[in-house]
Amino acid sequence: MNDLLVDRLENTTVFTLNRPEAMNALNGTIMSELEEGLREFNADDTQRVAIITGAGTRAFSAGGDLKAMASGPAKNAVPLSPQPDIAGVAASEKPVIAAINGLAVAGGLELAICADIRIAADTAWFGVFEVKRGFLAGVAANVLPRLMPFGAAMDLMLTGERLSAEDALRLGLVQKVVPAEKLLDTAIEKAAAIASHSQVAVRGTKQVLRYWRDVQLAEQQKYYESVMQRVLLAGDFVEGAHAFAEKREPAFANGWPDPFSNR
Image 1 (cartoon, rainbow, N blue to C red):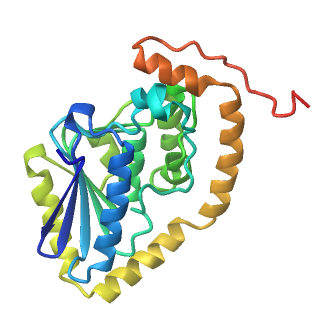
Image 2 (image 1 turned 90 degrees about the horizontal axis):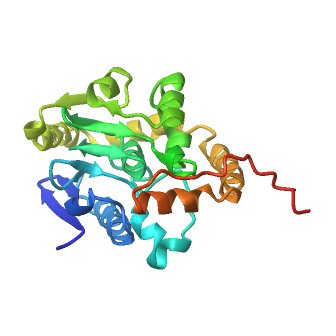
């Protein structure tokens, strides 16, 4: 079974995260295949809009595979986002729609906010759970306050609480909520409407709006990296990943590490 399914429907390319047994968690295979798939999509003049969704009804994506991070080759991975984008979704010059069919948490939520338009099933819900695992959300910390009210983003990221599809619509995180069985058809209809217009005008509009949204995003990314390095000094990420894999409450150090303490 392929971890990423790619279907072309006239002018629309549909990418389906295909690990339903793992809540469509983002492993290395999905990430590399999505990145390559988006490169092919961007290079294909017949394809005008992309849709990203998840297989099954439970999850759009549960984010990074913490069980893999806690053991095996990924155990030494550092959860540092190298850029405020996932797999080149935000960087695409063509419009990208996230069709959120279930839970979208941590890196799954971050993948969704890299898209330009978000449509959610009425059964979907959202969460930024990184504080529960001992590290700092990267893409969400940089982008989420640019998409919804600052206080709402702060509340969501500090409490690690769930956000329903209805509340996500009210706060502007998603643009539409539909019955789950109509989700993909609604996203395809939206894509078809966009594809029917002048593609020069569509891409120009996206570039101007993205420029406004992303002003000083590169500077914010550098600040995030410096703060994240200090967060990782505490070692809470290692404890959080192991606690998740072992299904227990984490025992965090709960200290704000001094980066100069060993000098």
